Image 1: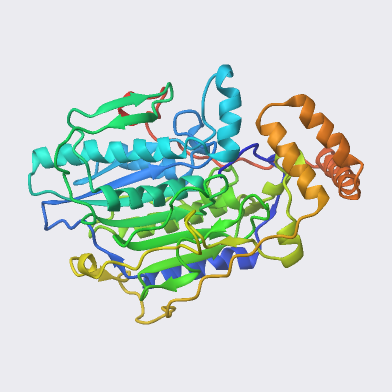
Image 2: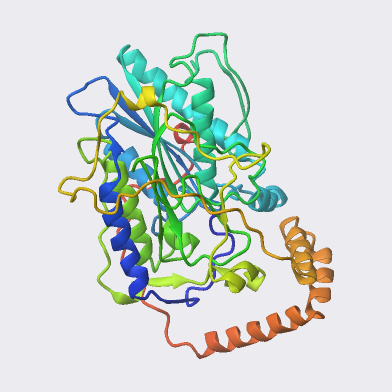
Length: 468
């Protein structure tokens, strides 16, 4: 989930030395990751498609450029610079429907991700159309894919790579496509044609900014065997019960240094780089760009300038969004964020498939230039066991309150909240809110805002070509 109800701008605390050091450690580990080179300048046939799926509430079309997520920023760079043999598609996050009449649907989507399949299907069709164009220009084109996502967009990116593994890349010629008013594909029938690329033959990789699966647990999000390298950036300071991190690969290195999951300082949307005080967001964005650039032998993305102003480096208290309704009982009890390792509704714990040895033999892997050999590269680490927070009657009341809020049932919401306020937890919550309001009123002038130069000609409206 991305940002539903961003907390006030003053609701943050300064990042400490450990927060900043976590990014240095992550960068050092990333240098050791054995990243596959998917597109080389000396091979005119190789093509790389970046499938960008944004987080909850995040939209390239509706958000101001300074609030674009890392996913939107990366897509827009590719879209505007047009690097050779590289293209990208983009799909907005859940909870981005427009119009008063769609408010109930939007709220429901924000909590339960009911447009998950439509967004994955839309991203897949974008790939099919781009692959068809490339193969028309060069019948020997070799299509490679990287799934890029933030929050639930990361879950959609993982599901997309699974879909490509199982379907191959379909020929979009004469496909019958039905879209909703947001441009999402709600139904599609492909013509009876051979696939452009057979199932299981597309080389893939994944870049996942703090994946969260809340509401999408019933979808198959296992990374496939054709995902030859995965880099996941996980938030250390996200406390909300509803935002457990989804470990698509185990923390640290795995599969012989071909996957890496780093945990860095910041809350969920600090990692997604959507806040204005985004010092940590810039560091997270630059980690992702460093990974993507190594998928090619020629860097094709620019990093963001690292802010000089110390006040830009803050950890946002995301748990105080939604008027403080978010629960943090698991973090409060354990001091750690809950981690989810099950990526499928099937029985048992289901995770990433082992890398396909045949596909792996087709590519070159390499650490970053100049990286010291062996530094930080460890054997695969076991995934953390699934855990669940103990529930109290107050938790059940808050679940009912959140469901009423998301379904826009004001009367039910008021009734449940009145019941909650009579509980000890509810009374403690009211005292915390009163203290929070007092602190805000006593706060000094607003913190200085970053001076971010927006990209040239940001999209003023929804472009049909980019909403397929």
